[in-house]
Structure formats: C-alpha cells, structure tokens
Image 1 (cartoon, rainbow, N blue to C red):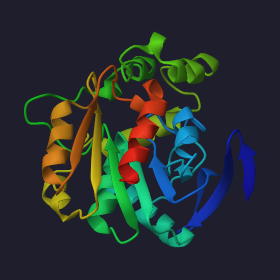
Image 2: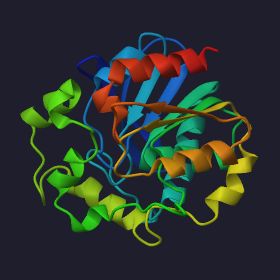
Image 3: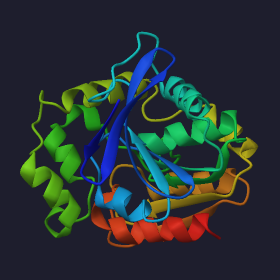
Image 4: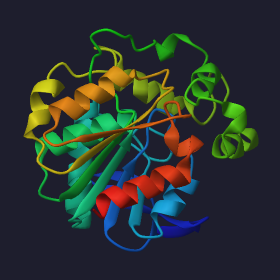
Length: 265
C-alpha cells in the first residue's frame, strides 16, 4: 500500500509478519534513515535534502506510532534483526545506513551482524555505549516535553524544531508520542541506554563509518561518540558546533550535505 505525504510516499512493508510503515522519496542509491527516541515526525527537511541524491527510506520503528510492536520485540538487538530483514525483504544493496540516537544504536548493531548490504554507515548522537566519565541523564523520570526541548541547543533558533512542535506540541504524558516513549523505555531502560557487549562487537564493522555529534549534546555525551570512533576501524568523528542531540532538527541541510559528501567520497 502506498500514499503520498509531503515529499515522501507512505507505504507498508510486510517484515516477518509485521506491517512496517515507511516514508520513501527521492532518487539514487538507497539510504535507510532510522529515527531516535523522538519517534517518526514525518518527512523532515533532512529527508528532503538527502533525497535530492538518495532514495530515502524513513520507517517508523516497531512499537512507535504507525508500526505495531510484534510480541517478541523487546530490545534494540531485536530492532536490528528486524531491519536487516527489511533490507532482505526489499532486496536493497549498497545501502547508506543512517541512525539518530537510539536509531544510531540500532544501525550500529545491524552493522555488527551483517554488512554485505551496506555501503556506508553514519551514526548521529548514537546511544548504545556506556560512558566511563560522563553520565547519560535519565530521560524517563522527566516530563517528555522537557526532554524534547533539551535535545536541541536552542529551541527558539531551530526552524525545523519550531515547525514540528509548534504545530503539534509535545505533551508530558499520553498523546500520539506516548507509544514511542514507552517503547524506548522497554528497549533501553535496563541496562540504561547501552549494550555491554557492543564495544567488543564494533571492531567487526567493515564499512566506512562517519560518527556525527552535536557539540552541545546534553543527552549522549561526546565521550560516547569518541568511543564509537575509536572502536570502529577507520571511523571518522565530526563534531557540529551549535547543535545538541538532534542535528537533523537544528542544521538539517548542513547535516544532509555532510552525509552526502561522506557517502559519495
């Protein structure tokens, strides 16, 4: 089933018996973009810019918004298995895999499992690694609106952030985003926001990797980005000034251009 939403076409893809909701648009090599704890917020300026030279697939994770949660899905590792099935189902190859926050964690675990379908890997503010010195704040004990606002360096100056959340404000509890918040808690609470096995698995990744971090990230410390860069062979770390945890909301065009440059290099 396919329908048009903005610049992206909405379709559902049967993956292991689950109807995965996906926004798709653009042309060129495939790029799978995995959202973070914010959940799917529609076709973003970032997607639009990236789709000028890529066919962008932007799914809603199982358990978030439009995609139901299969009963067996309990962890980030399960999500990674599921999305590798998605690549098989769509027969995609030479994929640029891009993940934000917990989506970056999913992407990293996907790449540790299998890289034959991947061309490049991009991790933006990725969760999944436990920092040794800094701390990851407990987002589940704070009002969700406060968490969302803390994900950007300056909410008032971020046009994309204002476009999305002025039209559809975040409520502290309940509402359409509650399923994603609950699913994030289910997958990431114990242990909190990391997989103890992941640092030992990351050296298995054998695709060119770009790690991107906001200099003002108040959710995932820069230390985690440095750990990803040091653990993945040949990985490059790019720190963006004036950005928090969501560079795709604060500097969507600049981020998309950076990724296009990396994936075409």
